[in-house]
Structure formats: structure tokens, C-alpha cells
Image 1: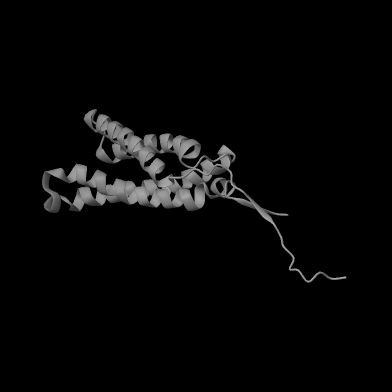
Image 2: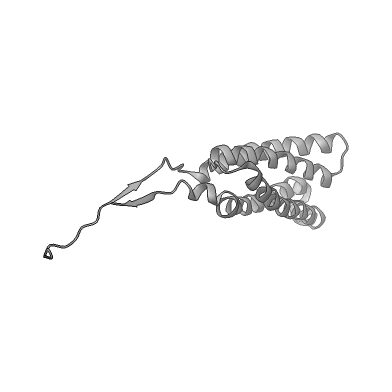
Length: 157
């Protein structure tokens, strides 16, 4: 005999602790990495190294700190370090080329436009462009599986 009452299905949503504020944490980590990048860059330029290799050295130093802090704090990924590190370093290789290249273009062509602030302007412009690129790359490529594993799971009862 069939019941005339509609069948009801229950669902339980299990919500693991979701890290909120990826952008806020990313910006805090970014500020720390940019400060390290700038400190290394200025130290290397002051010691006599050319601006291009000095910029690359600062960028790489900031990149390593960024991987550690973004993996463990910003995106709280628990995936294997080797997988994410490989993707992260490819992303940052592209970002490095963009950063150093943009820095170079502003250094070469920016003097008439920016005057004596060319070095600072080149640094800031390259940093802003790469910050946006890096956040999007980390959020949607590098750490996407770590983020997806923390999304709510629906269990049908």
C-alpha cells in the first residue's frame, strides 16, 4: 500500500572549519613578502649588484616565504607539499618573468614619465601586477584542491 504523504529526505550539511578571509590573509602574507623582497633588493643593489639580478634575488626570497605562509596559513592546505610546490613554483616562474620584465620596462622607459622615482615606481608597479596574478593563480590553481577538500559535504539520510 502506498502512502499518500510525500516522501521526505533529510540532509545533513557537514561544515568543516572554513578559513574565511583568504584575501585578507593573502595581503598580510604579501606585505611580509614584499617587505622581505624590498629589503633583499635594496641590500643587493647597495652592495653593488645590478638592479635586475637584485630584483630577481629579492623576488625569489619573498616567493619562498610566501609559499610557506600561504600554504600553511592563508589557504591552510593539507595536500602533499611536493604537488603544490611544483605548481606554485611554475606559477611564480611566470610571475618572476612578469615582475622582472615589467620592472625592466619601467626602468628603461619610465624615466621621462616618473623622473627620479623610477626605481621605486618600477618596484611598486611590478609588485601590484604580480600580486593580483599570484592571488588568482594560488586560489584557483595551486591550492584549489586543498580549498575544495574543506568545502561543506552534504550527506543524504
